[in-house]
Length: 241
Image (cartoon, rainbow, N blue to C red; front, top):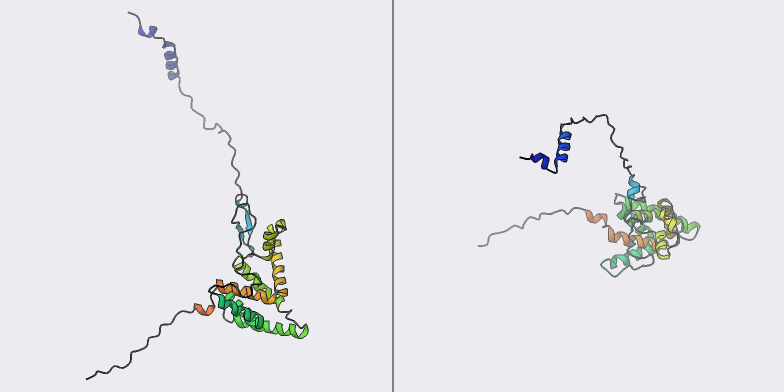
């Protein structure tokens, strides 16, 4: 009878496998250094998200990737739109136009009151404006002194509501000065100078534009008062016979 192991053609392979099983396994040394893997460098946040600065100097990411200028809102009405628009604020726009042409001190105090909403804001802005107005009319024959001190209100409105400035509007319409507008610091300095120039050369129109913008965005501080419920006792009732 023939041996089945000898007649099996897979005998050499089986024997080699049996020899491998009998060999003791060599322990892996714990001191064997692991293959080096390149560590991923941690990228700074500015390399992932383009950073910019707001007008107040606070760093923040831009709204559109690749666009160095944030998307800013435009003014509700133009600088020379004296009578505003024909909407629910039409009567208020006419009032603003009359105040800006005949009593700019009242309009300036009202704008500051809406923007600041602090007690005494109207008087603290209206009275100094009146004094500057009288100084300009007395010494120079025109209202040229007050605009040099009232232009920060336009800057505050622009920063509060993230409105588009004159430099950005010029860059959007003409496409020039792109590199200059991309720099936040230079652009803000240019916008401040444009605010001063707007108040100096077009002071009544600037006050009216700011008044129309504030009336559409902020209610008057007097309207924020809480309602008082008044209880009226009923009249005396007499029983009829």
